[in-house]
Image (cartoon, rainbow, N blue to C red; front, top):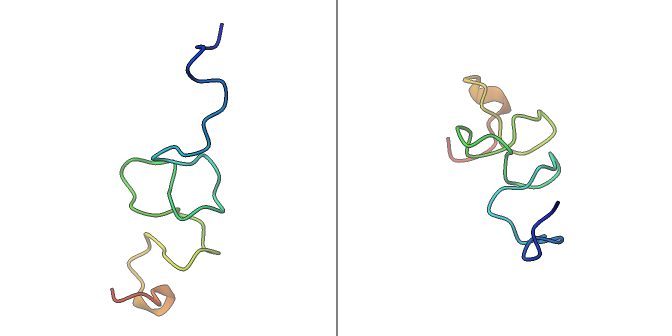
Amino acid sequence: PPLPMFPLLPPLPVSPFPRLPVSPSPRLPVSPSPRLPFSPSPHPSIYPGPL
C-alpha cells in the first residue's frame, strides 16, 4: 500500500522522466538521453555546455 504522505509528489529531487533536466540515475548529473543539452558522452562535439 502507498504511503499517505506520498500520494503524488511532483517536486522530487530526481525525476523518472527523461524530459526533465534531472536524470533518474544518481551517478549522472543529467539525463543520458542524446536529445538533452547535456550528455554523459566524452565527445565534446555533443557537449554544447561549458564542458
